[in-house]
Length: 339
Image: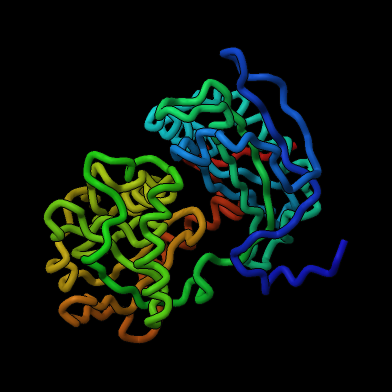
């Protein structure tokens, strides 16, 4: 294997040895198939290409100090993919097939799981697409589920160091009764204009507001938002926000640490009084935010005055990572070792 500089990996595609595929035909899922091809053979009238019938997941495998490889809360990813499938009328992938595929692809590509202590992990991408042929607007009757993997570094190049973000009001990520609460590609396509512009203007990501009133925090690009104030972990609640498994876990860790937890609507104005703010998700884990700029008004919200993440964000980040890597007892039963 080539000499991989594990600690210098970006968050991007990395070719590995194998991927795993499974096909849904005649009303049933088939057997898992292993492939070394990076390409998919597909009909030009497949529904994923025309009507957006696709969903994906993001998850990670971690190599611990004991050299064991751990998966983090795969059951929640399986449930979320099933919810996404229901949202755009695709065949649901049963949890047992989801697990078998994920475990198999990690095991087949075990040599690409980064060593402990490098700050890198193995990113896992389950993908579900409509492959059946339709020209009229209707669901496919055939689907493909596949899982591929690759080693990655932190999502934001700054890692756990604080970043700046930009609030946008001229682009909506998702509608209130749309697909924002499921993990489908259309949500991300709709956010690209704002995300690319934010990067060009010097920000790590864009923060979207609710599409209806332009008043409440929605998401930080590809991540959930959270804030800390008065020993309370506060995170937005909305029908257009993707339920982050990382955020769900941070909520449990916050409660366990004695913090209060509030899931509610969070106005842009009130974040001025927050002591800490951050973005969280599988790819980013936690990304502390040092500055938020309202692109429309120019108003600036500043945090991390000493240039470092706040104490609560740091504690939550370290606790979550310690469980994921097996450094601390997994009292929540979130991880599963791949034998």
